[in-house]
Length: 255
Ligand SMILES: [Zn+2]
Image (cartoon, rainbow, N blue to C red):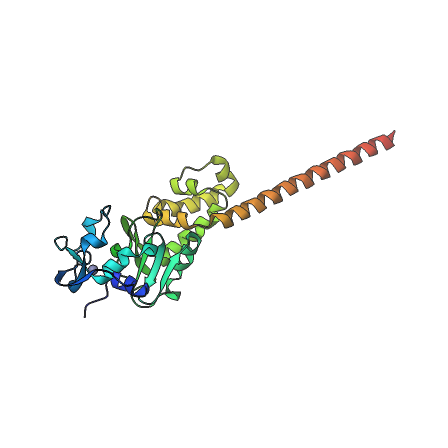
């Protein structure tokens, strides 16, 4: 039995959108390469700035199957990160990504695809690999593709989120930390975290984890922490003043 293709999954998830200009034909699909009895002329489907020829499975063909055509024309899967199985299409906002990637089993059944975009303008859909294991799967992210191993990356993500309360995304990504941040974080703790980060730094997975960390939540935490520090400082200062005053009174009373 032939397994389902990436665009068949997405076409179904999109609710089988109507495709214009279908003709009877006996050829292979330019994009996915499957044999087709009907298809749309490639010229009518692909825009003039289509450049992904290297990802096309039958470059000699002039026709595109209904599923590939429908998916390529669907704007929502080009300008959004998404997770899809044959029955569900989830368009993901940046702050949704972590929940879906780490808990995919809650959202998909059977074969599924995952496409992430940070530029919001490149085709992921027909370049996604078809996955079946929600604990270890391929992510298509524009021009690259990589394995997302949930169990391994969960620990890295937890450490990153904790470190993010002290360090900026830029520091974590590059490894160029401010000395003052390291001191505040604690040198020993820092060394342990950095041992882990160093194994992943520079990888697409590491960059994705940093990208998807929730900066709004983090900023709220940092703001609250700064406020508490400021209040504590003011309290100590008032206490000091009180002490001085008391000492002075004592001195005076001695005379
Ligand atoms: Zn096709």
